[in-house]
Image 1 (cartoon, one colour):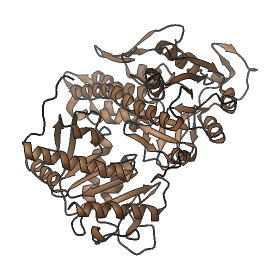
Image 2 (cartoon, rainbow, N blue to C red; image 1 turned 180 degrees about the vertical axis):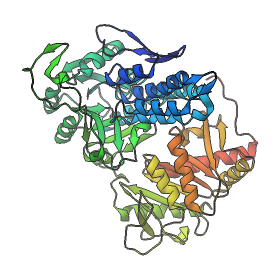
Image 3 (cartoon, helix red, strand yellow; image 1 turned 45 degrees about the vertical axis):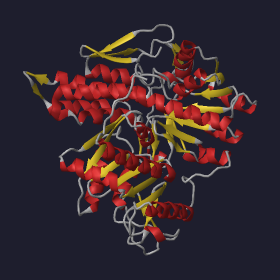
Image 4 (tube, helix red, strand yellow; image 1 turned 90 degrees about the vertical axis):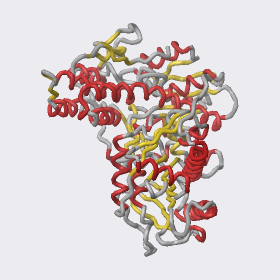
Length: 554
């Protein structure tokens, strides 16, 4: 059950043909680019993470076919990669998987294959982390009782490669003994819920009932649903969620009934380059999917159809988006629990929080004089410390609001934003962060200088317990990038943006040689905590002389 649904064997991508389920578990062996594209288009392989990995191996298949007498035709590989990426335009993971693998093209077929295999291995780790964080959130919101949850489409190991996202959260809750029942939407018109999710629920031994999509709202009204848990194919910069058609109406019904609506997806699904949900191109699928099923016509011949593959749910209907990095958007959940959240705070409130944390970091000696800067994101803008002000005397008014897209001020205060603004906006454009901290702690700064001086671009730490506080995909090991310092600070920001775009698996911490460290997170407190963990770990490595220490088998 826990085995990957995708494997790479002898130059072939081997997976389960989802078109045959639930009646037959049929192996699908893919060896050509045309077969990759057909599998994605016909939904033999489906689910955002799964098609991202499939796209990655598609690039490997293209490269193997484009190699003759040991010479790789790179132009041919790039053309084939573009064809693969166009197979499903709405799901951002496909293009992400293709581009991440294609970046290794200069290294030839072995480098492409190694990157695709890393994507495959990484997906399982990412899914489990996101699923666990989502399960924790659901229990906090719904209380300590057997939970009744509703899910839509399929988000399990079939849609990913292992464990699953939203279904992964259901599996975690089931293992905790906290799940009473799952209501499974059939998910018309192709019935991924009925054919695939119900099959996975039975495989995992999870109690479930199948329902028609149009009965979901009534299940909520009759108090049979504690929370709705779904996946995502794309999440835009404004927090809008593109997912299988039918998701939007679930979100509306959940909001009406005061039920948490949780989205569980990998960070790679976050598409910060797309500003709004309305900018997403939603693909229209074949009319035959609506006018009949299984070869049997159910509508008069020639009936016109409206058959969008996805819909887009606006951010104000989403309680929380959960990735492997934890809860990224929690505005509605915070309102439900009478808490607070930086995602919905006003600029003035953000300024007060920034000033308070800055004064604390100043007292620690990490923001001496006017050095260092802090920001909090609000949609397309960010509130950041103003330039040339002592961080020990900062007030709520000593901030500037800038546009994330170009780092330019959008308020009329007349103050200049911090010189390192481009570093902050580079993070916001490439990550789902809500806050960034840039500070100059002595031990971490020294480690960055030492590492850069040796010509190394990343530094590895292993075995330290503090790694768990840094947002690494692994709790025992982390590779932190080290960027060169430039007098032209926007050049640093450009280096960081390029790296984070090409390395979506990179942790939410980085070094800049001679220029301190930058950390980010879902809240200002989380970003600050990561800076504190990184400095403490660097101090330990200075005292011990070891960046990697052995860890026992347990």
